[in-house]
Image (tube, rainbow, N blue to C red; front, side, top):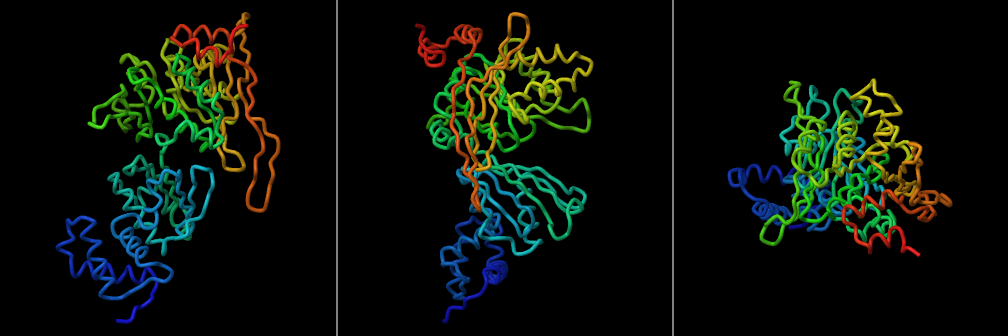
Length: 436
């Protein structure tokens, strides 16, 4: 039989018809291997080929369409892929962990095809997406978050917009951060050792700056015997539980998420969760993001001896405390600004500010300390910063030239605090330097 070359979607249409009419009963509850065997038989019998695809590529794409999520399947779960953004049914771009943003080679066939694939993805979260529920946020296996909007929210030509965020923080190592240019070895050591020894820390920056990813790495490095409680609004991004080869849990971690309800008394918010877990004897508390009244609860927790880390959306290290203060005023609008500002400065003496540069690379732009002065005022001290020298623009990209610089050591007050929490002399010497 002479091979016949047609478009991929022509092959797909015939394959779906062949399988549904010939093997429908067998395939009702069959596994992927049986379907693959039937597709191989179909391709062998029909001698169909798709333009620009090898036999192996054609089979894989057919399987992706019939059991997965079309061409998106090849990107999901990859450790080098951080985000998939569908800007319209005909425009899909992938953000890699390097910061590079690349259009996908394949696209959806038409708006209906895109909508069908996205509905399949949302069905994994038992979510319905239609004209009356035109925006949804769901979850896929493998710690993947999907946010979808369409119908009356968009024009007909666009059809849908989708953001698929993959959380691969657990796969990134200290060396990955250093080699990727996010920070120096000394900067990562400073952030980790201070938090590990009792210094509450705020990871601040814009969306996509790498705040949650860095926080996830920090809490994944905590000692196994210490009790860590993580709190998140909705589906979980943190995954810090470690097991041995027999499935026995090695560390001491509890992950909690909010539960939203239209009935106020049944609504479990981050603030309520935080108040609750303070009774559970945590050594460390990690809050996915402070964006409402939970900020005041986080400040209270840190100021009463708990070690707290949180992320915060803000535009600079200097604005972090003002942003925290504005969130706290949602809980206590009549509290004086000066008193509230003092509270947030005391609660989170260390701010790690991250940003994503014009070269799409994430960096720690500054690590700062709010140092209390004898007269009660606060002085902001930069411990490390990224010194930007030049942006070199070409037609398609921008090269950011600069370097990380240590500006100051942490304060003596912070030194006394971490010594009281067990920091060894070796780490004291590395961070503050040996006494002369």
